[in-house]
Length: 373
Ligand code: ADP
Image (cartoon, rainbow, N blue to C red; front, side, top):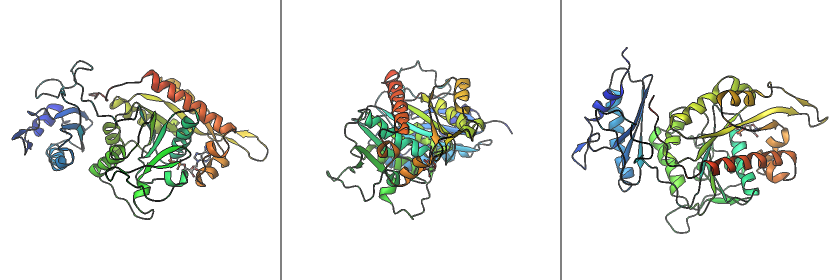
């Protein structure tokens, strides 16, 4: 089957009219960041923030129009509200050729929040949430003002790990106040829905849930907001990576998974949306016997460091498999809080310092640029 091309995508999108402005969305320069790869199509619809949610039907219509093209396997369209003066893709021209910085679609940041970082993993169960939590707490211990956003909406674990329950209030009647424990602000879908409610999310819902947790929450002044991403590298994750103005991403992997390339997919995903990968943390790196202190490398320790070297990204540190890490997170007093002078807390603080350093070094970055493959 013929591979679908970018110009076919744009042609299809020319058939979609913005009902309020009486022209098609390509002519209106609303379409940008078209990326086509192996039949998977992604693009962004840039919209006036004031119209935001009202344009969901238009987003869907745009997806449908592209979906009908032969050779298209999946379509993800993302609505982005941005500051004025976008440089949009024009019909025949090569997209993405605008000079860097020349009117890139800038994703509005979250006022008061200096940097947002994502913690991601190639798959579930590698300890991503445990790492996000301890990393956030370690950053706070290092003196930063920290927020923690549980975007792992499929299995929110922050309420349990952070020892928080109850529903967020809204002091101003407009925005939700995050819950606070151990000096950091936390927002999770787990606060908003009962734990046993099955959550079925579709692309646009994921987007609006995340956007709300970012923008409709009183985060106040933060040095860093740590976002615990859902596991995996599928469309939901890509959508999130695209819709959040990320300063960078941290990848969590176990030694054996990095060998299986799961984490590599994560890397590629962030590279595609031009989010800098700050580095890899190897979790469950080796096992320390709680009885005799003997260390065993159950999962061929060191895989992540070697792999990070090969991929040219930073190795941020390794955290052993230790029952105390699991027990303390499950009990709602993460190890960084429970044993602040212990070796694990020191490890997390060292990783946190490295991450903070990297954010500073790449700080003030503008929004992701879309890489056309
Ligand atoms: P993910 O978010 O990747 O699904 P979690 O952070 O929920 O993973 O961790 C999965 C399980 O592994 C949890 O029970 C957690 O307590 C445990 N765990 C995570 N990291 C470690 C570690 N370094 N040592 C021991 N247990 C860990």
